[in-house]
Image (cartoon, rainbow, N blue to C red; front, side, top):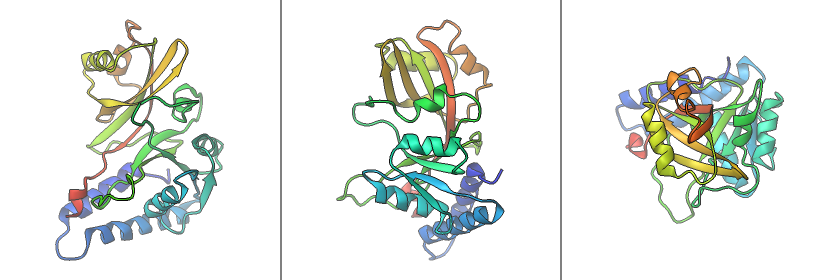
Length: 247
């Protein structure tokens, strides 16, 4: 496997934890990201599909900062095109916007629902960007955040988050959903987004820790089929470092 997001996160955590001296930590991160991107390109053909509509320049910059300048980018007009490019093998990884918003509900068909209902070798979330970023100064809108998808499982690094899509009947409250998750022994970090399709609602929930589909707690979520009728683990990522890591 060429792409190792968890291993990369562990390297950066270790480098920043032991760093001493006046050399800027952000410069250290950028140097290592360029080295990792170059090594990926040497090992195998490696292209990244990027959603570049609207805030396109910001997402292209985010992809360049993470994957480096030598990795070719495939520009896509919609997140759905990014998912298809990765699923079809046209790109080894894809960059899609972080789901959700002020209202938590998304219009149309959000990209993440295809990861929940797909079959076979479907993409999964493997990283969250930026993994480490300088303190936000404000004044130009919130900086972009994105998820990286690839046709592989997410890694365990010791400090992780997992994304699951929970299928319920309509009008299940976030409090009730959180209670159902907690009862299994899992810990919810919150609902990131909701997709509503008539009598079926999908809730994109972020869990603390590294959780796989084989985890018995996942099976316990649907024993009664109420309120959760079905659950899909759609990936996860190493928890990004706070801006204080660069201090």
